[in-house]
Length: 318
Image 1 (cartoon, rainbow, N blue to C red):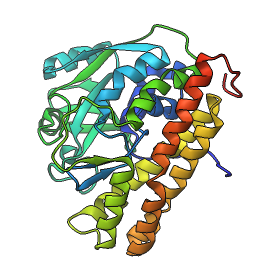
Image 2: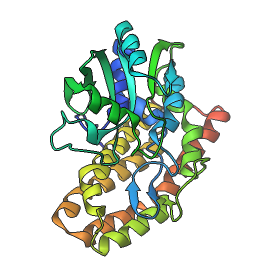
Image 3: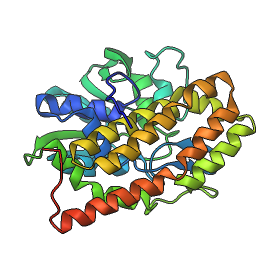
């Protein structure tokens, strides 16, 4: 199957924020995103909210793993104060989040909490405003202190700790992008096997079962906010993650796994028009085609893992 890499903007807030902090030595946002192992799976949280990411996964679970894979480290501060953020920003940019996006009123139509997580880079703190690079498309945005503190408390975000920031980003090893992706293959296999220590709400399901169950929900009309969540967020970020996963697996010399990820990207991306247009039978059919691909991807990665331990030569990568 032909696969062409995608370049563009989108809801990659933490990967883009990391890239800003790492500077010219940063790998691509695709490598950062895939190294979190988030793209390896699907989850239907509480049997209602769909994400095209691994069962039991949330962004914070993958951050240290991703940094280690690409050869970087940072210092995490939870429960930080505004004064500590101001002092840290005086030394250089600070990675901050999760934030509640709905409190960031420089983004149009944001008027209060919506339960959406977000990450930004803080550049400066004054008595009245926090200056941020918001990777959602707003460089040098000025956020009133009260709004920023409400967002930073993140009481409506269902993971992470209030007032979290990362500082002290430092390179600790020279790691090629291909080797970074190879390093996370064992963790990706676990993600696709739905191995998780994270407590999940009752009714939560993953991978093929999640895709089949979501297909039934879509056929029934995608009500109760399902359609809106899919068309405004989940499909966009899911298709991009999977396209980047295909690129990264090819880079790592894993063409079989890359082909499966590319098919997943096409299937998830194909949902956008029918969900917006209300062609729910077509969207449900795509989801049912997606369902078996999670086992297929895990099988391909298991083959690659065995090959790497037996010294079979890889093709591609660097």
